[in-house]
Structure formats: structure tokens, C-alpha cells
Length: 285
Image (cartoon, rainbow, N blue to C red; front, side, top):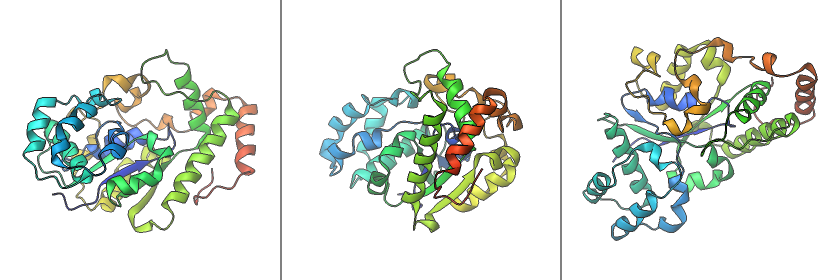
């Protein structure tokens, strides 16, 4: 069994959580699959998991939202899991992540993890499912988050397209609420938590990767500098409509994108809302 604690990536939507996932997943010994919330969807039913439940569990697993993005083979997964000595639900989830990692040619997995914006509404359950994991909390300039929401809302409808609010005021308040919610949840988890800013990744990718991997206690190599190369790039087509910027080089133009999207009146409104609210994390834009 893997000895390292799993990793959970947290952040307000459109804050770089997917970028962070792809970046970390570039490491040979780490697997953070595409977003899929089956671990929580199935937790209540299988939290007292025993191996005699495995067939029923697999039937339910392959009915969960976004599981098709993992391209799992049900028969192969079943054979793999039935060979394991799985004692509880946590080990079951871990084995599925390891199986996914092996599927994309990762053989010596030391850390596995999850990125799922769905968890924002189920933070306390994370501690129950993942056995006191490590956390990376990513924060992005709220004005850029607002502009990103607006641009996603303009995209054609698709099966998994996020449903975001449209008003600048509502988006800003949600940014405040979500980041404060995460900050409160991570209070007193300092040794298991790393806070990183989207803008730092964009402006200094190498040192950001080193900082992240040092937190995870894994070795940095130059390979991770090509984190979105084809080797381990696994973002599924079902979500790529609003994640196209994961392809290609890091672009410094992704900082202050709001200047091309928002009016001065909208910018002033965002600044006003933030100035009137208490931010629990130690940073202010």
C-alpha cells in the first residue's frame, strides 16, 4: 500500500485547479486523474466496504458522472481489484487511482490525489474519505476569475459545461464565500496545507513546481517543466471546451485578463465588494 498521504487540490472554479492538476500529474510517481466525484458519490453506500460488495460497487462506479473521462475498462479493473487485499473504502479508492495511473503508464506511484470543484460543498467529507490528506489551495485574482466565468458562460452548451452565475456581483461574492470556506476548513491543518497563487505559477513556473513537489516530498526533475506534453496529459475531451489553455506553453497573458473583458464600472464594483468583506486567507488583491 502507498505510504504517502493522498493529495486534494482545492480552489474556487476558474482559479487554475485544472492547471495545477495537470502540472502535478506530470510527475512519473504521482497520479491526479481528471475530475470525477465518484469517491464521494458512492461513499455513503460503501463506507463500510467489504470485498463481497465489489461487483455491486463496480456497477455503481461505471454509472457515476464523468467516469467516462477516465476510459476505464470495467473487466480489467474488476480483475485487478479482486486480486487486491482491500480492507476498507479508502483502500478501494486508492487502488482505483493506482489502476488509473498504471493505465497511463505510471508504474511506481508514490502519491495519488484528486481535484474536484464539487468538493467545495462537501469539505468535511474529504477528511473521512481520504484519511487526513494533504491539501494544495490555489487562489486567483478575483477580477480574472470573474472574467473567466463570463467567457465560459458565452460558450455553447455541452453536457458537462459548468453552470456559473452571470452577474459580476454574484460571481465576486461566490469567490469570497468559496475561498473563505476553504480557508476555514484548512485552519489548523498547516502541516498538511500549501497555499499557492495562480499568478505565481504563471510568472515563475519552475520555482512553483519545485515548491509544490517539495511540499509533497517528491523529487523535481526537468521533465515536469513540460507538464502538458503528451506523455501524461489526460484531460478528457468532455471538458476541453473550457480548458483549452491547458494545451501549449504557460502564457503570461493569462494574468490580468479582466482588463480586456470587464468595464471600469465592473472592476470598481468587484473592488468595492471585496473591500467590504473579510477575507480569511492572508492575501489581498
